[in-house]
Figure 1 (cartoon, chains in turn blue, red, purple, cyan):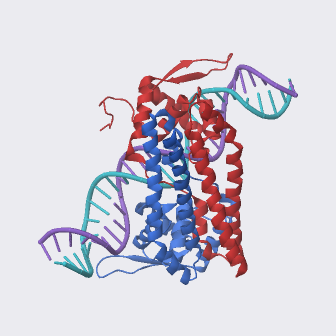
Figure 2 (cartoon, rainbow over the protein chains, first blue to last red):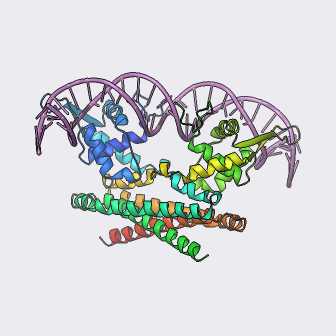
Figure 3 (cartoon, rainbow over the protein chains, first blue to last red):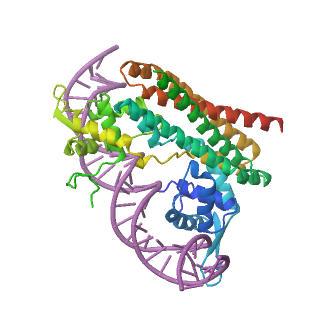
Length: 188
Length: 188
DNA sequence: TTCTCCATGTAAGTAGTTACATGATTGG
DNA sequence: CCAATCATGTAACTACTTACATGGAGAA
């Protein structure tokens, strides 16, 4: 029943597992740090909740993709992880697999905009304004984490910067289209 | 426990219900047509599966937001729906509520790009290329449904056109950033 | 000592998907 | 008569979230 290419009894990995694996590769050690890394980087296009992380680390360990060891801070228990060569290969394989790159954008804001003709013109206009402002805030937030991307770049990881630029460009495009629309509406 | 403003025993509505309600308002009659409308319009930023639609229509009917009637085609059973004034108000209220417009973008493609430094440079480059091509295809797909947006516009619904332009601008921005990155990489 | 952060976990729920099943109608 | 489309449904599952619980460590 398992789709594992080895036909063994290892748990099948989900997307969250590759995200966790990728973050361990980038230096996140504990589950707690992984959550922080996600919040500082990919949260603009992917989120994971704290609850998902610990079972995920277990699955990765069972598969031999990470090695974990008890690493308490004083009397506070902690478990830290490192990626294994097997894990590196698994991550690469997942990244190369063109099987699973469906375009998947889910945005309630856009849905609301789509239906905005159900509103009074003034309410519709304020919805467009709210949408535009949301993107303005996001651009500011993205600009504020640029230093992290620069740091990653100097560490040999240039793609975080690429996704940062993509995010900024995305929201700038939203702002521009909204502004044009608002202008047209103001003239009418 | 129910958050219904009337404190009654009506089922709480989820996002999918407002999407269905909005589509009924735009003229989708049966569950089948609702699915088609979604595929022709908002599928680029929101999808719903066929399975969700029929329970959703029931919830909306219980709430009095749509009126349904048996409307068979020959011996094939069919149920068609219309939005009620109460439903119009509920939709407007949901659209106006600034409570639930969190930015929610979930894109595996971007996640893969973020982690692409784990790959050999050539593999990373082809991932960027695949990402760019995905957006190119999407722009073409969006351009091909422009006629529908124009038709909607002449029908008094101008916001579908706005979301279409947003989609096009979004992907054009992705293409541009990727192209720049690819150029830089090619020189290195 | 009290607040914030570090660190992990359980339980219960909501949302959404895939696979499958059924059967009528329409057009070539 | 055969394929595509119309039309609805059930069952089982995966993914993800929210709420809650616990407690040590470090700083003010």
